Image (cartoon, rainbow, N blue to C red; front, side, top):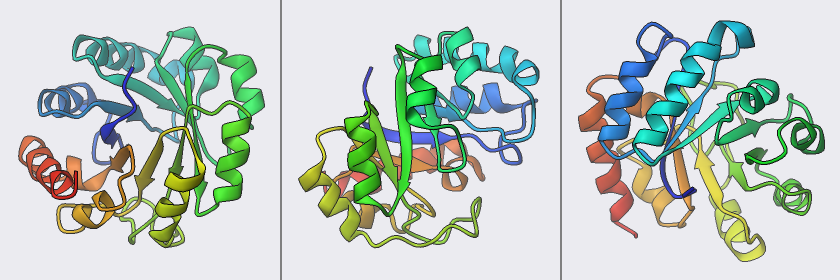
Length: 206
């Protein structure tokens, strides 16, 4: 499975469970290669059916499906991957529950944390926020120099996240992360048009 390209993250408000499957279908048809289902409020049982549908949809489009912070569910439905952050379980704990799939780790602005995650078996690491984020307004802003250091020091794929949109994606793309992760700038408004414009912004420095 590819860990490259545009990485869309769902959101309880912008992609509510009633419409998330149809919204993700549009995103996949428009060229998104990685989907992460993120829902911080409901139980695994509440979201299991939707995650199964999303995994099937991603498989049909040769895309990667990742679940945020639900290792038991990821293992149960044989999801492609799992993502964990600083307030979630450790990578070693996650790997014990979810032994075979992709695991990504949020490292914010820390190369040290990323190197530790790499040595502990992470499949990719994410850095950010690089710009003020509408979905995570309290995230600290990270210098883009982190991406340069990450490219020099890490061998696993790296992902940039946080406040990235049509007007600034070219700045991130210049630092050549493997993946660029986006929430609001994909789901607000016309999904297909948003993705077309974002992909054009990524191509500027590819």
